[in-house]
Image (cartoon, rainbow, N blue to C red):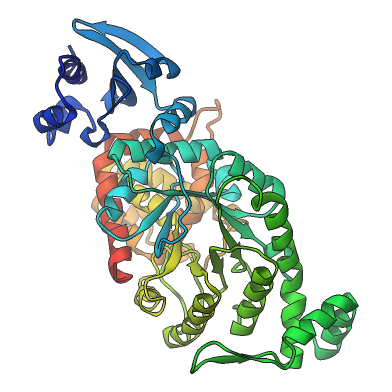
Length: 509
């Protein structure tokens, strides 16, 4: 009898979860059972165990709900057991039985953090990182771009988060963010899949050419807008002063006002349309975020106020808004720019958000250690922060430690395909700054994940690495990556706790 079967026998013999946990806790290597997952419901006991190297849902007992899961049944000497795959279909049943495995909105939660899990293996590490801290985790967070580059679906992403929540026995709630969605069809798909947060990327409706135009061209384009729109906006904003608080005011002077309208008005109308036609009456409470960070120039306080005020006046309920901050928030590395200027401008953005009643959202928030103290302090502990690629990089670090040969192959592939990856992401990395692999010992390889250039190269090529195929159609890297990270799961969780723990610490959490 396998040890996980011995655990089943304990339950079938009538032992309580507390009794079994007391016996097996701290001995995972022997029993291969995640003790925090043990739960009883409807005359059955459920838990997750590793069986022949693969995680399975194990159900002991003969309650009616056992029949809803797809799996193989077997009889032990003292009762019936069902072993089920951690599939999307079984996860849908799980979510019906255990409400805490369903995502929920985060209205009223002060600090919310998005943990993009591109592999579907990191959420348990995220949960362990935030346990005991005043952080609401958005565990399922993916963009359409990330889905395409990883070969996953929103059902896959949500299932991975739900299984992790069940594995860890985490009952305090988590969110699911359809990140950087651009079309009504994409938003509808995410909502239909059960996602509780929508981040609308308005970049295709923001006119980035306006800042470079001369005054005459701006006047001409502005005059071409509908008369009723111009009259309404001018009456509300033109030459007006808005007092944000006792020390901060913004003014809408003529030329800047016209440029602001031309840059953002289409994006505002598009957002209103998506909200009214897709989100408002979807039947669930959705955390709605507007993203205007995918622009070439930073968002001025005037522009921020204008965009948010127009949305709110139109009845759009936004939970958060993502401006484009000054400096650069590049992928996987610290903030690039003038921290004093960032602090000054960020404070004004925070005041606007607080005045109008939503949270600031900080995108590409991974590893921005030098400005984390500013974010935590100026927002008074109320913000949304998005991380994603740094979780993949910690997986790469574990690979470099445990299988240097695999890391070397991935690294070489990443450098060779960097230009292709740059079609999707903006970075400043220079491959020539990365030490030559042949000059590094195996023990030195993990240190590459502490170097900006190497981090960015491995960061943005994740999709190409995961989707790469050999001539015979087999996976070049993907299967080996998953096998290694599953084998060294605890090491991956520990790496995430250490690295993301530093994020929380620098934020003052």
